[in-house]
Each structure stands twice: as structure tokens, then as C-alpha cells.
Image (tube, rainbow, N blue to C red):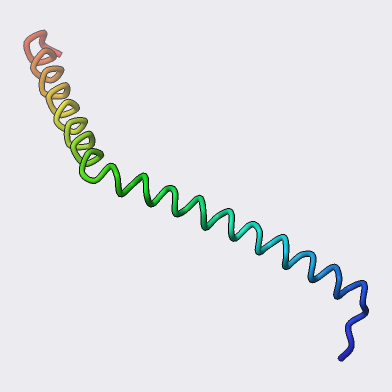
Length: 70
């Protein structure tokens, strides 16, 4: 099976572009991984704090509604 030279050139250029994109994605994923590794447990603390504040807000609003008779 012979591939015409023009088609082969097009396919080679496409593969080269895809390889460049994969390399860029690899660098981006490595940077993201490094950032996540630096945060360690800080994000977990923020999520827990958000949950606690949300819970406290609901309790206060329910209590306020109970007192006002809603």
C-alpha cells in the first residue's frame, strides 16, 4: 500500500502538531500536580470550614424562623 508523498507529508505534519500539543499538556499537568502537592491539606481545611459555616448559618436561620413563627 503506497501513500502519496503529499498525503504522507500532511500526516507527518499532523502528527508533529499532536506531539507538540501532548508535550504542552504534559507540562501543564505537571505544573498542576506540583501546585496541588504544595497545597497539601490546606484545601481540605477550607472545605471543612465552609461546611461548618454553612451548617451554622442554617441552624441560625432555622432558629430565627422558629422564633419569628415561620
